[in-house]
Amino acid sequence: MYSLSKRLGAEFLGTLLLLAIVIGSGVMAENLSEGNNGVALIANTLATVFGLYILIEVFGPISGAHFNPVVTLTMVLLKRQPGSELLPYIIVQLAGAFFGAILVHQMFDMQLLQFSEKARTGWGIWTGEIVATAGLLLVILMAKAERVSGMVACYIGAAYWFTSSTSFANPAAAFGRQFSNSFAGIAPGDVPAYMVFEVIGGLLALVLYKAFGSNNSTVTSQAPNPAA
Image (cartoon, rainbow, N blue to C red; front, top):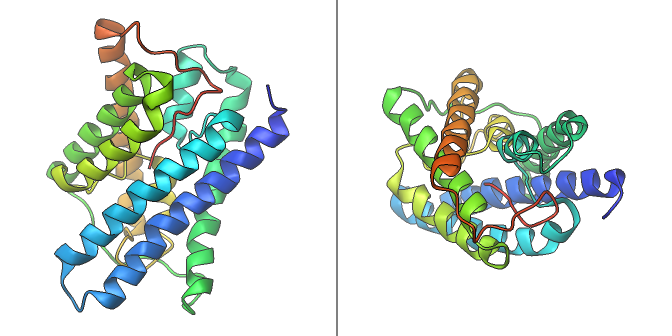
């Protein structure tokens, strides 16, 4: 097992790179799509799927590749990770998400600190976040450990399109994306509701897992179990 400091470092860097991929690909797609949001979303989706798969493979053996406070909370509730690590994991995940947005702005010569003006609110969208997060956690908990990275990446790619919220499914992602007034952004005032419904989705997944849990799942706190 890696030391806590190395695992926290992996969570910070992994979350930073995940947000850089999500936000950066959104900026590039918006710049090149000439106003075609469908094309921009396709590009954003593909970059996220490929990038997420790589990040899980790289950081999964070190920290579990959570990149997501709901995933960490779930692992703690299942006693697969010590409760004392919950807050440190969440802190570095949120910090990584923030600096991921800043890194994108630096790369694209944008104002470094900004706030999104893109409204994402309403019961339909909040329901989408419940579905997206519950589905993500069920994949993580019920997939065979050696297949988690590919299955999570594929699920997130699908959920970008079948959920009304475009599948944030991650409080750290919602937190980081509020700091970018770009294609992937979310207005700061809408972030708290996203976080609440993502946690609800995670708890729903835990209930379903308890009811239908698979013996095929061998996920532990040190196995690749991420989120986007």
